[in-house]
Image 1 (cartoon, rainbow, N blue to C red):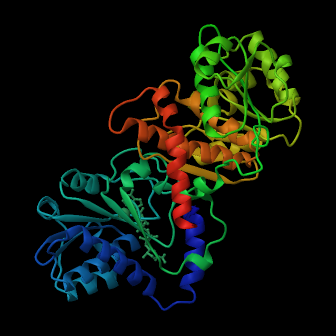
Image 2: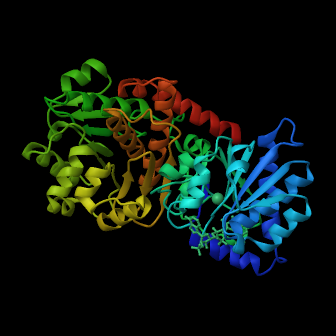
Image 3: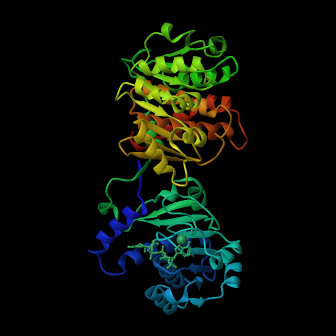
Length: 481
Ligand SMILES: NC(=O)C1=CN([C@@H]2O[C@H](COP(=O)(O)OP(=O)(O)OC[C@H]3O[C@@H](n4cnc5c(N)ncnc54)[C@H](OP(=O)(O)O)[C@@H]3O)[C@@H](O)[C@H]2O)[C@@H](O)CC1
Ligand SMILES: [K+]
């Protein structure tokens, strides 16, 4: 698992570390790591290549200046463009000058002619988008960009971009990952993120955000053992679909069928198409006839009328784990009394997109992590907030982010597949926060595998679920044979 820490916590940890290490040593360590990645990006042949440093008013610029000094010693032609000449980091500036670097306040030519631009405009103290002078220079960049700690102009704790900002080819960050590296636009703008160890580890407490690695998901994914049968992996119930939207039920039930070797039961008006596509699903017309299940998936294509409300009532009263999606979320938003039907402590995951979230817990806003946590605490449920980066928040404060590598999964019916995956992991007994996180990871990977460079329907994503699980399990096997 990869940890991510907010800027407040990074700063606290840095202050503790700074108190017991020699002055300037952290910055030099950081800058050396930065220079190492820059050299790799310049390869082959670094002597005489042109690196332009964009240097802001603080320590982020200091990192860039020190890295420039290291690069200069390797024969790189380094020019520092000072955006705040009176406040440029004095020791870094002296080191660069001593190593023979050029320093200027007029950066247009240096930016245009660069083989690599290092963005040291602003780091952890960043607030808001790039200011005009920096934005004008960044507009001119055609070379690859290496960002120091973060691409300037991106909000460090939310990944939001509200104006001009750097788009990096790669980012070198120090001590730990920060929220923007895994969230939304920030994750896209960071490029490949390299982590440089500056000794911060022992000072960092519990991470604010967790990112599951493929190997974690593969290790957690339930597979049958020698003593398992169709019941021991859990029975998933699917209450979904309608005469208008039978496909949603077929997709959700299909996902539950493919995700684990547990049994799947279905109730609702789409029994015929489900039987035709998934003969292994036991399909019945009503909840009362369904038999015992360990977890319900409810909502996809179900409708928000009285019929849907009745089914949701019965599901919530059943006292088992629930994954509520789509119309079930709208019903919960429209009929607050439904929440009271839940037995306290029963695992529950809700999977809203932004509009569904707004009905339930107000506008999402810029801080998606804070929004998901707010809803999780308010309703005592695990909230999986859909988006380019999926955020999963638990009422106890745990937050997990699944940073998307692509957008292939953004297609009609894709959410139905996700809810089926979550339901089957809940039925298998996984912690609901992990169930949602593992499902999000497998879902995204299945989309990527299915797309292979071209748009896909949700049915193709669904067909790749077994391959995605294989890839994830192989990742787990490769780290712990
Ligand atoms: N601490 C450590 O141990 C280590 C720290 N390290 C490094 O330090 C970095 C943090 O440095 P930092 O705190 O000095 O501030 P930094 O991010 O450079 O900002 C400077 C000033 O910029 C301004 N500004 C704000 N927003 C802006 C915008 N949108 N566009 C333009 N300017 C903007 C604002 O000043 P203002 O102009 O508002 O007065 C702000 O005060 C961290 O990211 C890492 O790289 C590493 O060396 C490892 C060891
Ligand atoms: K930066």
